[in-house]
Amino acid sequence: MLITGLFDIYALLFGIFAGVLATIVNSAPLGPFWATFFTNASTTDLWGSVLKCTGFGAIVAIVCCYKGMTASGGAEGVGRAVNQAVVISLMGVAAFNYVFTQTLLATHPELQTLR
Image 1: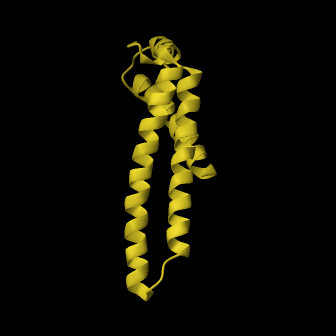
Image 2 (image 1 turned 30 degrees about the vertical axis):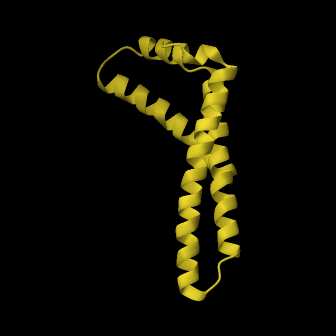
Image 3 (image 1 turned 180 degrees about the vertical axis):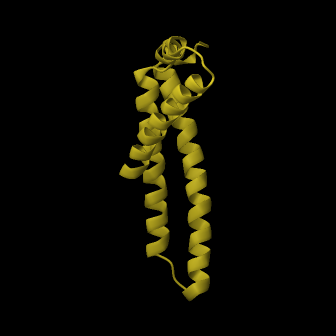
């Protein structure tokens, strides 16, 4: 759970770095890149991303640990438990994603505007 949040921060930093690198490689000035970045990237967006990824990690960890600890029936049972864990995790992540996004947008209407 903690690692998914940290990986999200890592991905955000590398995404910013890639944008800067692409701007430099194309011989464009960095001023417009940073202006657009700071106009469009709010603190709410960034923390929402970290919280969402942490929630995803929690769902996957809880479901997979439960299914792994309750697996029975030998190798066939383990295979069945893995399959169930994957399906339940994906459905849980999709449901959490929907609820989290709708809640975030409902509580922060300024995020809905096209920039």
